[in-house]
Image (spheres, rainbow, N blue to C red):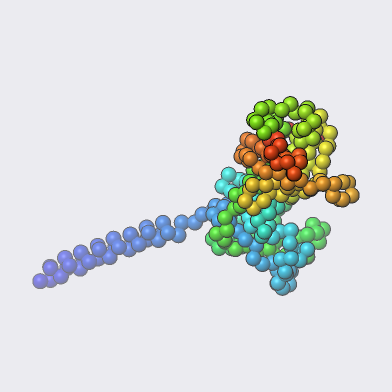
Amino acid sequence: MNTLKKLCYLFMTMLLSTAAVSCSDNDHMITESITPSEALASTPWETTGAKDKNGQTVSLNDPSVNGFVGFSYFKTDGNFVIYGLNDVLRSRGTWSVDPQGKTRTITALNPDGTSIFSRVVDILVLNNNEFTYRIRPNPNDSSVYYDIIHTKTSHAEPSNGQITLASTPWETTGAKDKTGNPVALTDASVAGYVGYSYFKANGTFTIYGLNNVLRSQGTWSVSPDGKKRTITALDANGNVIFTRTVDILTLNNSEFTYRITPDAGNPSVYYDIIHTKVDHKEP
C-alpha cells in the first residue's frame, strides 16, 4: 500500500510540474513585449487632451496646443500622416522612435520630398492605449511646456485622396476635349491649366509654368467624397484672386486628372486636364 501511495504521489507531482511549465510558457507568450516603435504604429491616435506645466487642463482650441491636435497615423513603413479632427490633412512625412521609447521624431515633407521641419518631443507615456508627449514651444525656456495626450482610436484614415494629392509634384502631360481627342497644351482653351503643381499637406498650393515661373498660389481642398478639388488663388497680400472647383476623374499614385468646364452655362463643352507624377523640385 505504501508503494502505491508513493507512486501516486510521484505521478501527481509530475502532473503539477508539467502544468506549471506549461503555464509559464503560456505566460511568456502572452506577455511578450513589443518595441516602442511597434506600439506607436499599432493603432491610429486621437488627441484627447492637453495639460500645462502645472498639470492644468488646456483646451485643444488654445493656440498653444491646437497645432498638435488631430488624428495621427504612424505607418510601419516609417511614414506618418496627421489630419485635423475635421479629417483635413495637416502634415505628412517620416517618423521614428528611439529604441528606449524616450523620444519621437517627425520630419514633415513637401510634395517634392524636401523637409519643412523636424520636431523631436519627449515621450511621457506610450502603451497600447495612450501616447503622451511633451512640447516646449520656446527652445530657450524649457520651464514652459505642454503635455499632449493621445488615445487609441478606431477612426479610419480619410480615403478621399488628400494624401495622394499631397505626396508628389504633378506635371501637366496631356489634355483632351469632350470627344476624347488630344488638345495641345499650348491651345488657349487649356494653356492656363498647364504646369507643375505642388499641393502641400498644410492646405496650401503653388503652381508653376513648365518654365518654372510661378503662376498661382493659395489654398486647396478635396471634398469629403473625393470627387471635387477646390483651389483658391491668393495674391501676395492674401486677397482672393479666384476660386475654382473641378471634378476629379482620376486620382491615384501616378495620375491626377480633372475636368474643366470653361462656361458653366454650357456644361457640354469641357476639357480633361491630365497630370502625371513627376520628380521635379519646386523652384
